Image 1 (spheres, rainbow, N blue to C red):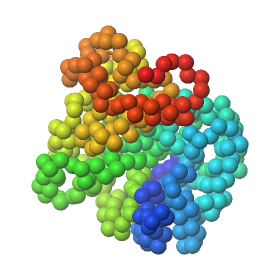
Image 2 (image 1 turned 30 degrees about the vertical axis):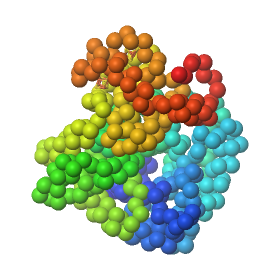
Image 3 (image 1 turned 180 degrees about the horizontal axis):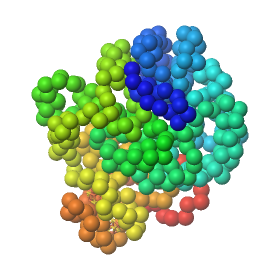
Length: 400
Ligand code: SF4
Ligand code: SF4
């Protein structure tokens, strides 16, 4: 196993265990199976275990496995505050204490504000006194590192990053998301500040393995080194020295073995020109099934009316390269729940964006099409509820 540095000298295994995909048996986690997988990972050098309050049964299972095998003090536990469920400072303590109890521990090594998509959510938490709370927990040693996991756009990521002296952050990042979500811009900005970056969705929830177009699979199979699609995705990440830990939601011994091998072999800066070409081929083949050739470059931004043009197009493409449900879910997370609404329906057709688009895309026309596809009536209703719940009061603008 290879290790990269945490902010306070921790040696973090480059492969982290994502504990949200344990195999289930009926409604509960198959604890015996999960234990075998975790122990294989632990004995192979994996020391970073990521869970969250809202992953059903995950904190409890992890706590039990670590305690039973007496390895709690030999690993780093990362878990998350469900910030979207918090409406008072008392609630922060309630959730945190419950998490300690579930995990059978007295401290959390890496604690994250879960699922921020917008600076406004962080500001709301500050309004509830989270900064004092963090200071107290760090002083008492109950929290060793404080960070946030993120799913919004790169602009908001940079704002959150700059707003506090974070110890680490967690972003969705893979070769398809190089220019979306926090993206490579966010990765580099965090690394420049000396903040470890934990990567989630390194294989886009399996899309970069199971849902690759046939021609992309053929390109991978034709390469003489015989790396699997998963290895290509992970190696692309390890090639970047700014990446600290790559989380993988492993739920088989074979998966643990293969990922451990990749994490032991792959070095930063290893990729050759041919390797990058192969990744480009795979991306091109995925792109062939997309609705619009938006590269996510963001030259069209900012839109004077706040429309998240690349964000909307990315989700629209996801509807056709992955699934309609997947694209809409992504839209819900990354576009619909920002504090300031950023829907295509806000476009006034000024045309400014089209003047800057290097792909010469008919943005205005395509935004209308994308909006119709992404937001059928029932989904608009769901979004309205979601905004009421996640984007707390104080919003003045119209959202549709
Ligand atoms: S045409 Fe629409 S999307 Fe483009 S910049 Fe103007 S308002 Fe924004
Ligand atoms: S400028 Fe064009 S290609 Fe770039 S993000 Fe905007 S719409 Fe996409």
